[in-house]
Length: 405
Image (cartoon, rainbow, N blue to C red; front, side, top):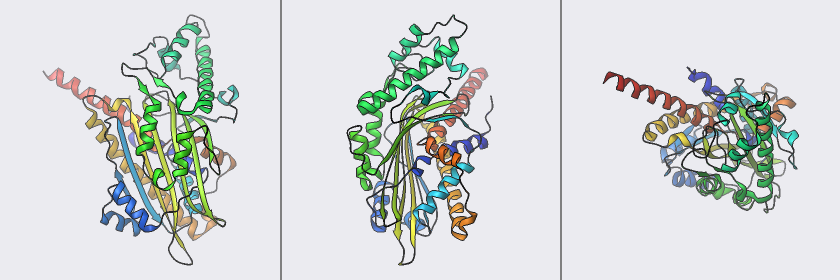
């Protein structure tokens, strides 16, 4: 099966940073503080920061210690308000839509099965579940979930596909309710491979290392660490699910996204949003992303907005003997496509600034989709897609080498 890379990259961008569009944040950074942070924590050189001040887009890879992890940061300065940048960012996400969204839903404050009524397991996933056992399963599940599929689904009955989907919904509902009640203690441990993966440990490690939020939005970091006992204050938060098609398999993702803001009068001074993946049925062990829009006064009459986006994601297929090659492919495409996303955002800001009436207008449905997409971030699908592509390419290369021998 051949996957057109240009098309898949566009649909990857759809799933990017839209949870930042839900609300706004605090801890106002000065230009000097921002520059110092980028130089010390993101390896920005003086030339990088000088280019950023001039309005150039800077996208960089971040160093990682875990071979399954890929991390990037992107930044751009625009002469606009935080609200205008937010509007332009949303428009860029919509423009990247290439009919990739299969289904989407928001969990109610008290989650119920109706929240998942539009979620269906892919036919291939149902067939894979028949043979799913601990240590060897093509879906990311806990040992208890695998056991329930084997015990509670009559795989010989005519309607076993519906049974499997219904049970999957029930288990996801139980999982979300448990997470709301116990926070990270309820996060799943995947047993699909010989090496189990604790999402709790993964997310705690990523939150410690993720850029910006710990330095300039400590309230938001504290909220996630103490959830569900933390004070919400002016934090907007929610859980959503998405099913997105790309490459060989659709991916179902559950995300907890929260956004916190600080305003001066009626003007937002800073917008910071954190998107935390708590489940994915394929490819992704964990992902945490931060989007920040920081207004810094340039003069008495105008201000500059700096848009920062950083993502740390871990994928099971990035491990192994050829992890460096696969991660290199993923990182290169991540940098290129994040740069393209920020360029689109800057173009849309220019349109808004020239004439507000030229700005792309969101319908009520589009606004709902923006929220529901939540933290389904650019790098998740990028990692999944390019890992598959790299694996296929490497496998083909090794097969041809063996034949030549």
